[in-house]
Length: 436
Image (tube, rainbow, N blue to C red; front, side, top):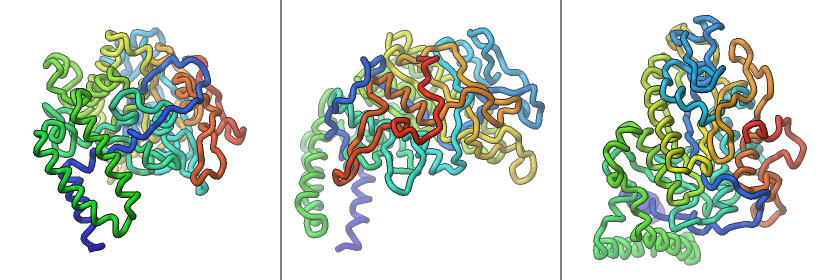
């Protein structure tokens, strides 16, 4: 029986029902307000793999072809003095809505540690696994509606446990479906939400029968806790809030405006979730680990980024939501400024955390500004370093969360600070007051 148990679990996961077990429903508000919140929600555009800063928001044509490759003609934006990649013409028209941090820096060259550091605002430590910003926000803010407080589109970030020591109640809810479809399908929301009451009840009964075997191994209390979470999730997905995930409710023109691809439609879904007061939404878009033929990949990826990101900023602004919604574009690191033209890389760029670019917009962040600078080749910070904990602390402050507030450690063994500045043990460039 023990050998069979995990196989049965995976099969139910594939059926799209177990994915509705929704720990975030347990989140309750905590009092840690630093100031009056300017922002209500965060949309994190997570470019997994790490996008090149020289090919996007910190072009360096003057460094020569060994660094800029074919991207030799950066274009001006609608903000005087700010240039970005020529393959981002739509975003160039909206530079007044966002600010570019060109001096973001940490020391972790691996995907795992880089992801952990940027997502949590902390260096990895063998002593304690900290929660990601989305989990922290879910802990302090709790549920705003029946929807989860922390949602990730489309797949888990992987690399680390985003709930950290806060535990499974604060893990992200994963949509697990492509929003470019007419409706979320496969392991996503729509199939369960659209089931008849009779069929849904049959599935519940079957799942409860299977769960009865768990009592022999996990204990009745654990099973009851799991069932309670599932019942709450199913109740939500049977209610009106399920329409937040129904992309067919959007006009065709709106969907085309964002781009009929995963990233564009994920941005549109994120806007829909912000309208329903979801505090933290991550869009997980991979493909940026461009060790090989970097410019072939940029030619494919950047137009998609340009259309989806610019449409999101414009749409949020037109709907009066940008002022209360933080948008963060980033990856776990940048790419090597010097291009590797040798075989087998053929124009690839490798991992580079020492200086790269992050873009922030809305929610109290000013637009039309550049923070910090890289050197002439984009290799190192020239001025005003910004560390992951500086960005995290600034985001928390705009959300009304004290960056020096405390979080509970496991087993009640003391407390942990939200960001490490409170300990005075990290090098810091300070809060991003120039764009707040």
